[in-house]
Image 1 (cartoon, rainbow, N blue to C red):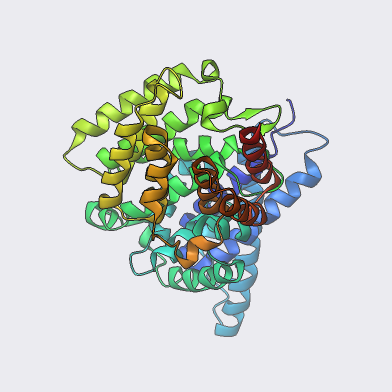
Image 2: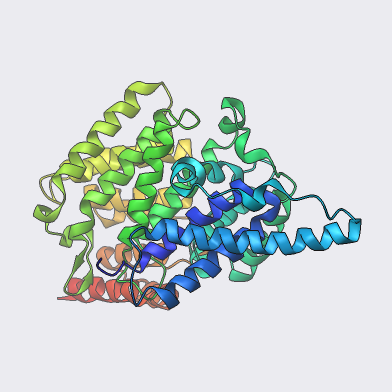
Length: 412
């Protein structure tokens, strides 16, 4: 059997935590995380010699055994203290059923993590760390917060989760409905991190995260708890972005939209994404941010060239998006589209008087776009100042190189 892709371990971590938490109770979440980590470390030691025929099942057996050993020790100690030496918990001899339990365990745990009694940031941090395997730095980059804030939020969220030991198997349509919006957000953040990674050990793209987010979103739509037009729109958006990934990296690193070879884009993914977008339009009357984002992505995917793109329609879609879900990032994207349609001055006019909020001041994206518009409008001094700020704030070398290349190519 060929060696496994190292990204396999990242995927398995979340799945193991989900299945073990469902099996042993949410109050044992911390132990489930420790057992999953222990199994992955055991695999790193054992698998260089020979990868097992069923690696996922091997990992689960090791993690399950570690969990049982820990709980047996704890329970035996407690029985001795309580003088109840004749009682044996049912789970001690209950054989693991990984293949049967994995089907929707991770999806159900996503719903659990998206507890409406937690702040939205707590929901995201808990799900991204516990189930998606994100590091604190990655979460901080995506949520525009400090790493210390991520750790504190995670601690509070885990404490809340420990008070809900049976929730994972008790969802109904009402309970899921209170959480579905947060589940969509988690999956989209997961995809976004793959689409433009914040980790230094990547080339700016992590296809594994994109693929996993698409897989879970499909599973969500197939599940009664998650079926609906917003989920369909989310799948459409991911597939349309995924279609363009083959053209986003060249010999010089990440490529901007106008630099990409469109012949490399995946026609099958584009067709499927458009089909999902049509499904999203007919499932119900909802119009979510994902519907609008997917409509914008479809405009890019179906345009013959960068110049032939319907930039005015895209700018109008971003204006609608601002009304559906107000965000300075949507205004920034609208400014880019307006600049393509009517010139850099039109884009800058939309940003006039708009100061980035505190959470966005530390993002390279805002300043890099502003610098590009200012350069194109002829304000070189302001453009250089904001370019330098974007370079300092760039999360990875791949993004830093992209900013520099954009600047240098414009100067020639």
